[in-house]
Image (spheres, helix red, strand yellow):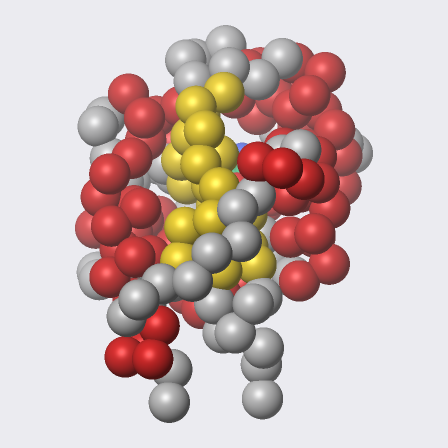
Length: 154
Ligand code: RTP
């Protein structure tokens, strides 16, 4: 059984912040039962975004992606915690291309274009660990109990 303390790095991208969708995205994860354990607005540098997207450095869209993410306003970097949050978080986000995303998913409800897909979610537990370490100091990720925890997990 997946552990209740699995963590995923969820980021509202500049287009999501500019469109006022930060609260909606956080709300959906909270409503599902996931616990917000870190959250901050960041204006990332180009070098920082190159590190974040290092796995995509050979892709033709890499430079445009890095440029967009570092020069279009802040992002909201979050960590959510809970059982299977990485896999479930990806399902909640929808497909990378919003046009392929089902209604009911975040991208399927709020966006149209691939390069303006409003949110990022870690694609594996290992990449979540790497991304959380990149974006947050250890003391910025808070360990605490939710009073309704027993109402989410049996
Ligand atoms: P993300 O990392 O942002 O959560 O997205 P993802 O895993 O669903 O997709 P990934 O392949 O990692 O791509 C990262 C972001 O790059 C943009 N992209 N543009 N022009 C293109 O062909 C293209 N492909 C991807 C998207 O904004 C995607 O979210």
